[in-house]
Length: 252
Ligand code: PGA
Image (cartoon, rainbow, N blue to C red):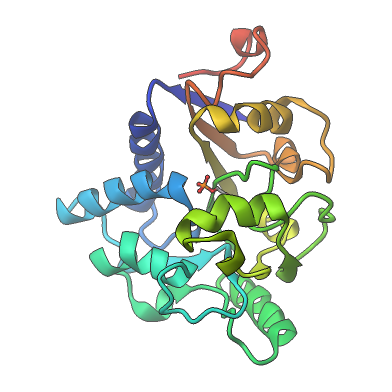
């Protein structure tokens, strides 16, 4: 695990975009695993800037998003489809057929989960997966208690998660109760992973996930077992890490 602690959230975002763009410059046909949420807005803004300046192109990039709510249209302003187009896809040269996001409106949602797993496999797996972390330690929508062996599946969202996402819907009652998410196995099969977090509210869960026991109660703790994990935090999100943790860890 490599950890980079940035002074500010903006520097965290810039550093994450730098890691992603380095990869795209070296391997233009990268398959990216993408995430949504407030943490991702900064990195996507920097990627758009790099594209506009001609530094990177997404023409040969394939993307797979982690998750989508069940039962809301792609055009809904709080859908993850909408988020991705608003913050990234609308502004870059990615080919529409290379964008993959689970279809939360599929008639047969179980078949949709299978289709998604197959699509990831057919594209040779994910090269670089980008992750945020929920206040309860979820990655994607893999809530506490999710077995580590899961592939794409339907989840019941916890109240913590629905409350945290109410800001995108106006009220907690409007937040869907279910979502489709890549499973922990899909995430762990990615060849490399970037985990990002900012702000004091994430400090405790980051410390638990990175230095506590690897347990299904803290889904992100499984990432400790990934051989190519880069963690990018701001100072606040890193503030509950044990004091001696960085003595022998790589901190850029
Ligand atoms: P956030 O969400 O970036 O909006 O904090 C992260 C997550 O729930 O995975």
